[in-house]
Length: 145
Image (tube, rainbow, N blue to C red; front, side, top):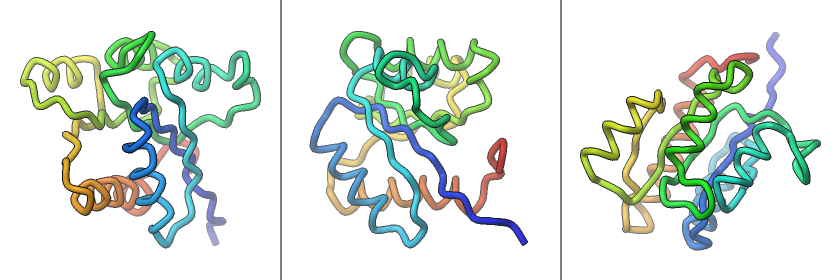
């Protein structure tokens, strides 16, 4: 029998309201996953590489990535993740406010696994985050799972 291990999710988001919405959506789910939060692209890369204050960070099974981040933007984070052989198998879902076609194309050209525009409505936003969580927990086979 397979032993259940919670999914480790890294949320890279600088908007405190969106962080709270994601936390609420994840806690609402019946499957307990671990949501780790960093607030800028530099912290995200340090977390992913287990460097500095994140030296004991767990390897995430999934990254939810905003594009509009301070220091290092989401595209730069995505590019670094996908060019690093030790990180590239981690699924990255872009979760952003941008609906710009050039951002969508750039995200997929940098090998994002999905591009989702954040709904502005609280209930829809919560539903989208819950669906992402459920998809990656129940449908997708992740490396090491």
